[in-house]
Image (cartoon, rainbow, N blue to C red; front, side, top):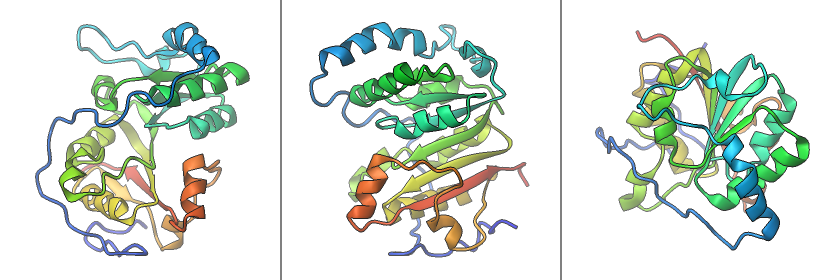
Length: 252
């Protein structure tokens, strides 16, 4: 039994706060494209490997066939939005070789880290979109993904910056659209305010239902969770993460 949208409990460290009813419909990419200078080997992988892994969006504005992106047969397709250094995505790809995983990340230094993992582990079930994830979501067909991850996104903590957060009514609507019935959207953050922000907006989405039945289910990592380096730093700094899972349901 899932918790109803009208009885969202407070998270540890702060209560859920209401956001504005309307949010920007179109979102530009905010953040860095590139950090420290790439090493020669990283530049080489970027030039040699990325073109073969990059998701080709249809030039005519049509929709992708996600399963056709992979050189092997896959049973289902997952998406990770903002994969950071790629350690979670690579671990999931190794653990689930029959699942095709698309990673969206515009930060070049994160992309090259994932490229190394793909290269060294010879992962054939990974594809990369190195631009803003909203364009990729728009190109995906309805009910085409079994799982979507958004892990530790930039919280943009200042009030004037919150419109830059990836989670919005519009983005959750798109995530719900591309999820198959009973598919799941998983969100993790070490920032209570962002977790509350996400719960409020998910509550407004008629196609998403929060699956938590008790507090342990949003404070305990999901089964098979490999963790991330950012998460380890957050825990060390005394910021316990929140793990939210939402299931795609039919509209009421």
